[in-house]
Image (tube, rainbow, N blue to C red; front, top):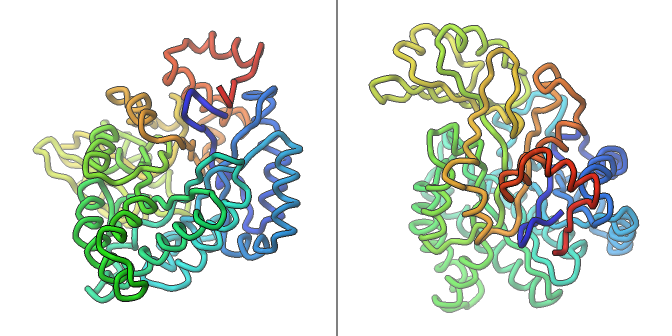
Length: 412
């Protein structure tokens, strides 16, 4: 759906499944229900999640034409892809595996280029596309200078591919690195530093030596096709204001093709935090945690599973934040308080001025049925309503009535 100049969707990584057959089944089963509630009379935008396995089955042009025709028949269009997880993302222990292969490996480049080709084919005429990806790699996995240079070279190759894809198809697809706690890029400062000191420097050298592209053109290609995905949950976890982070990236001259909307978990009560930490361990995803003490120091936990001395770690607690994507609305469960950082200082309105892709990404909702007290479809719909309300300064009742009476105009 579209709010003014912003395309709004939810990420299909909330639905279990790794193959394209799994994906299209989820679209037919769940996305159609969300569309019925949110944009019954207008086209409905999709945020695809394509594993490498799913992407492999969509390289055939005839198959892609069939997919595009089916989406059109359902009143849907695809405009963004989550290409962060290369492999399996559901129903098994993932943890640090989600970053592999990282950008120092050729497999990441090949997978991303396949995804870009697919998205360029599925995009409606005149619409840009975006792909979110890993923030170079996971920090604790030692990265030599040679590996960082290889990562920059691979990202430069991705930029060249996207530029040539634009030339051959007329479709613009941009790649968005998604900062995440404990990664090489985990906040706005590390993103700008990496882009300036590694991506531009090594990328420009690579493009000149490999493709004969001059410095000015090389920098233009890198800045045009490689940017950032601002995930509000991730910035909340590391105690960074999403709006301030957004502005730092934008002011540094790097594009922000995509914003992902989700809340993290916050605790300010020590006893409640101690009780809840172990309850939230799901054994599947990595839940990086930051504990801010009253003296301003911050304790970093690699994962909730690494919590061994909770009481000591929570001494003089001011606030603990957990990388655990929870819905964009307030709810009650085990004392969980959502950070709701995306509302800070009018973040939605400010970001909408320069970013045209917003994606709701609460992929852990299946683990939170007790918390959200409803089914997945209703939870997603409630998140849409929350974003619409904040974006347009509407009351919840007004949003409900507008949806019920008219649907939301996607192409306004």
